[in-house]
Image (cartoon, one colour):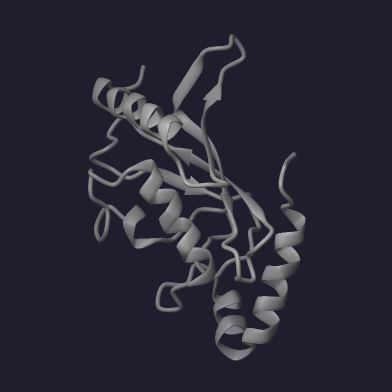
Length: 160
């Protein structure tokens, strides 16, 4: 059974999200087969920012919280093989605010996490690459990198 502090915080996060969330974003706790809600796993969608190579894509992200949340950050994962300099081949996102040793603070909300990940999409951090081959492509052939980003955006169209 999940920890009381984590569940209490996630219940409040869910209420706040339902009242007010950024346009185009989705964040829903997982539904169990019996119809109950699992607040420890959220299925999210992050829209690509207008005016960027990511525009038009709606990117699925799973957020896994532990019983130590909010003391410890959640694990945020895109589908395996997601094309981004700061996303591991497993789909795990490499971002300072998700790192317990560097940028994580218990006050960071689900909203702030998702908006931060959206910002990361178009402003990758080459100083902290998750994939060496994409780092090479990003630093040596930015035109090709951006072309592949646009191709990926087409693979994640909006859900009607």
